[in-house]
Image (cartoon, rainbow over all chains, first blue to last red; front, side, top):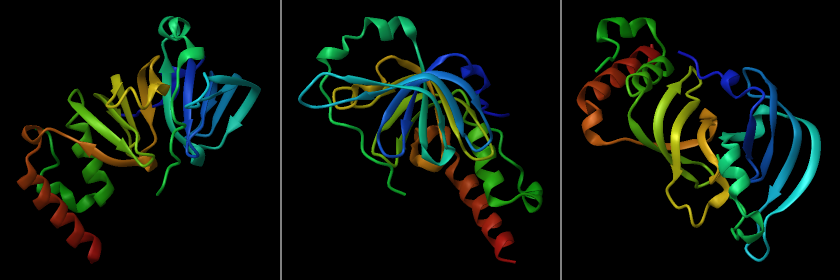
Length: 96
Length: 110
């Protein structure tokens, strides 16, 4: 049994990185160490004072060491989100 | 419950024991607590040799504090960032698991 990321290829995914950032993009490729290729990516910066800020990044390679979670985004639910009204503390960093 | 019988345990490393253990839990509801303090509840879909975990139908245990995953239904969690996997007690034969793990630990020592 393998938990391959194949089913997420060409889908919109949300990556939670080990330093607590969240990057949304289209998963174009991956390997066994979970190095990732993300296209059309942007970072979603959460703040407890302002709404979510989206910073456009473009085509990115993320090294597997830094990946914590890869979430498959449901586009319907995501477009219904009012990012301007979400207030949240940024995620913690991963502490080993 | 499918667990490696103890006679097979000589061929496998300790990591294979827990890999097999998690494979036997596929389909059950678990809560994964990560090393960044995020807790994700979901159904165990699959696991691999690195103990990477795929969960379906996820919900964050504290959605007010962590709205980051609101539009995510399924996720893949890298094994290296898992702190705990919480399971209901009746899904696990703790005695069997303990015995198997003890046997593995002794094999590894030698």
